[in-house]
Image (cartoon, rainbow, N blue to C red; front, side):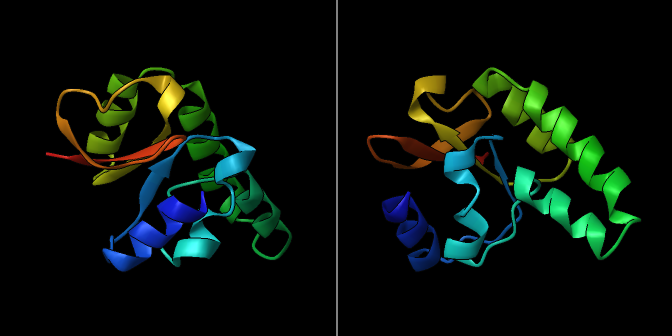
Length: 112
């Protein structure tokens, strides 16, 4: 995670970034200073802004349902998101995206 985060900051990737809903990626936004589309920790923000719940809940459920890299690409395209971070175990970047960065655990894909 740290290698990926350093690369994103160094290359000045502009968010939001679509990430999988997994605890290992929940610190990406903090480490990179780049907004993520949704993560599970953002749900706590409803304590300070109750109106945020509907937007967060909708995004959270939609992203949690995504399984294949092609589904992440389609979702990102639908929402105008250019970058996707996936665990390597999900497979390679799908058609319609290109690999920008890969390490042993994660890959960063950019919509083409």
